[in-house]
Picture 1: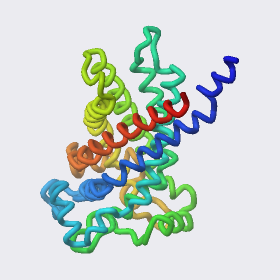
Picture 2: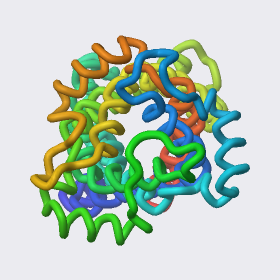
Picture 3: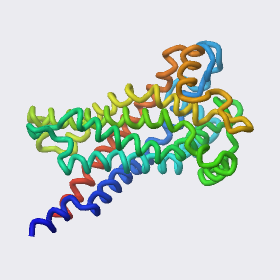
Length: 316
């Protein structure tokens, strides 16, 4: 009689549920944080390959960026690229949170002492983040181009002509094939693996430390909130350089041979940014990134924890 119970606890069906919970949690958070993602994308493209002080500054920071976009393009522009961003977050977190939860439930990230093993947790989160990033690359590519698209007076970066997510996916596939849909995948893999590892290990450790200290022991929601807040800070500083490079590679124009006109790849992008803009360029938009990732992480991980508890309740 124990075998059916084990199947119910750790079967493939529950693994699929765990992955779906991760994806749904991310889509919920994205609905609220996408406007900041629009500003972050433009801040990362502003002054591309130009020395500091040698380019126009249309967006000073997140509040200013939100105001400028709303004034020049209307409030709807603050949700540019939303369907593509939802697709990216669903793909990313279906794998990222799904693999982590499956590993957690099967005790693959627990050490011999019964506590979280940092290196095991980092590997599980990193693998999930890497696979999720690969799956979501076409959507990230499209969301970047749609969010960069702006009225002439406040445009930054190359301006693509896609009219929407489906049009962009079809157009890129028609012109460049499957390979074109995965432009910028290498920094995406690094972004996903490093960002996921730093966030999930910090989030889990923070909650474990708070429990050990008897803090928030009677408030699971507050425990998730504080853990997510800490995880968001660490994640932002770890992934921002890769996020900037992924944005640049995704938005650059291509020639008749479908080769990037500005960058030949991740290494070339890194070297050109360092030479033209300096090391600070890798943290362009870091404030916007945290202002998005902070609330996004909190909404995402709090929702994720609540859905996990709900799933446990219905399963018990």
